[in-house]
Length: 112
Length: 115
Image (cartoon, rainbow over all chains, first blue to last red; front, side):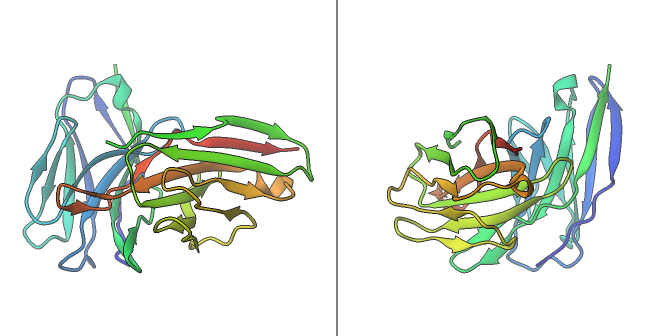
């Protein structure tokens, strides 16, 4: 199973972009990168996922390097409500489905 | 996005009691999952199901059991609760949507405390 490496913690100012890096150097060609976040130990919230191309949705953008060994989650205008633990996950094959292997994530603090 | 519900949200119970944690989803997802998360720690998969009458054990050994009699329902049962079962239990579901498969969506979780 491909592992991911993330900074333990980061902070950014409210209104500024938050850029959360993730290394996944052992990722294989058909494995997706997923990002979730967890606020106050609530259920993890799906943010975005990607395979090769950069992706954008209403929550965030995902930039994946050409060699796919790292990615960056971008929250373009961080708000206080974006304070959470952010998990970068390489989805692992499990029989006829997939499993998510959660690491310890990056604790993002958005400062007023 | 999936609508997935868990009840109760919080449960405090004495040792030896039998408990069932409920999980339901309204998106018709065929796959459902249970994760366990101790405070401040990582999530670990304890059970999953590919569909009705299918249940499998996950990566983390658990004394709990699960059943899948209906597509939308995936309850977790502890026959005799112990303090070591104190944890947060998170349910998730996934299915095929728009050609991209198996994005998991999580419920709000049940925080269990066994005294």
